[in-house]
Length: 263
Image (cartoon, rainbow, N blue to C red):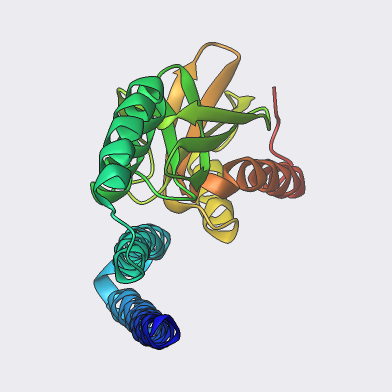
């Protein structure tokens, strides 16, 4: 009799184990399918947004936001799948949820700054305050944006130094690139006897040759000996230094060829 009862219990235990295994297999398959669907849907949405002509310049922001949202959804699905799997094998998840709530509260208090930086980074990306390649001023630092992360923003200043700023510390942003580029200004001091019209034409054509957009030439200062002509225009923020050096070299060559007396 006892042997029959033992066999019955063993059969019942095996049946439960098989049922639990099948449920776990279903959960794993559903999780794998859900992750594939999320990845495919996320890539298709990002690719479609990037293909729209009017937002082509915002590809880095779109890609970053897409990856962030996809990661959040994937981790949420993973946590839900783990909890369902634990419940399927007969583990009471109520104490686990309570412990996770207390642990999350403690971590939240201990990582307030990290949470603030991440939330600020999300809104920096969502509000499109600046993107990679633009020249901005954040606080007392001016430079070209090299990376916009969820926790920090990296700038390359005019001296070539890498400046890392926590997103939570970004209180005021001045974007110098939203008008089509950054302003470039070069002064040329010539003798007062020089032909200003001819020199101005040379400055204008040389600026266009150097890739300066919307060049403008005018008199910035003058005295009895010399006249200072100022050439201004717009250039891409990440190429400002290179364009300025190239322009100055071309101007020196052209003015020497014209035998313009420089002061």
